[in-house]
Image (tube, rainbow, N blue to C red; front, side, top):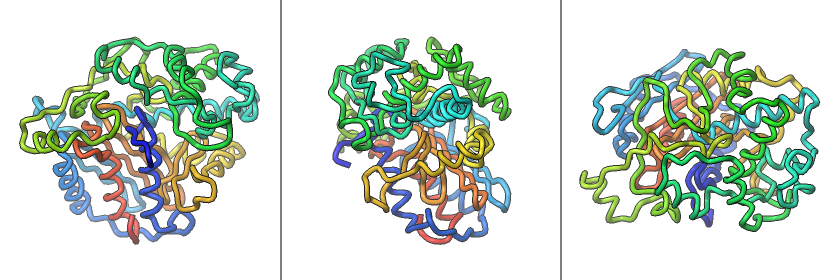
Length: 402
């Protein structure tokens, strides 16, 4: 990609991550991969080695296969808290929240309350060129609307006012002040603006706050008792939870995920500590990235989403068939669809905001589910820790390189 971005803060890197999985899978998305016997010791060793290499304070993984459920953890909840992390810790899940927003919109399509072909102007007449942008294009990132979270003004404000409570319309105003990437439907660009709009539309249709919509439609039916979208005014996390860290700040890492080489050296020799991002108010992500969950709840969620437990058969088929390359004709590239991504044989999403990185994926054919989280994001060298670890762990699950 010619423009770097954080997973969902500045999300073009989402494309690179998905592409890495797809290309490394060597065609496994279309073929049926063989599964290996699971070696729990090898899983733990891989988690330990990569977490230490990327200087992650704490990490956890949950893997489900036909051989059973496997759990591994690494490290501690904080730099000054030597409590070991657990699989039941709560974490900020970033852009995995988009799968919730996309799902409730598809449920509303199923109920006849909205149509994929509807123009966004039907619900939000203030959207630039909204007569020509469809609900489907918001879901699959083909609206062309500029991503507010790539702007200097957003990132500078986050650094100066981390506790600020953002209103969705403030985020949209930032996006609308910048020209679109392309005309609607004429390209692909991952943009949080799309999902914030969908969250507002969901609220208009159901007449409830988005956090209540998620609870009523998704969390309660699936028994996700440790999962929530916090109120926009809240920066709190339920106990237990780790602290979340990032080296330097948003503005310094706006151009590249990696911090400057001299600071990487300082990080490795211990003279540069990462900054604690745990208490930053996540309202600036809202429907696109403010969710909180646990590894077990995320595993249950991604299995339900990919296994057809949330939508009826027709809408589920439409969703799973919506995955397509970000660039037309690029069959080996990254795939994205209606609020869902594909990573080789797994379907799901990734999430990153300063301090936390999360991967969730499920292979409904082979009954494989993997969730990984870290409480550092991004790594000093620019890698996304949880996604990097997840890719390596899948090498212990599937025959062939991943």
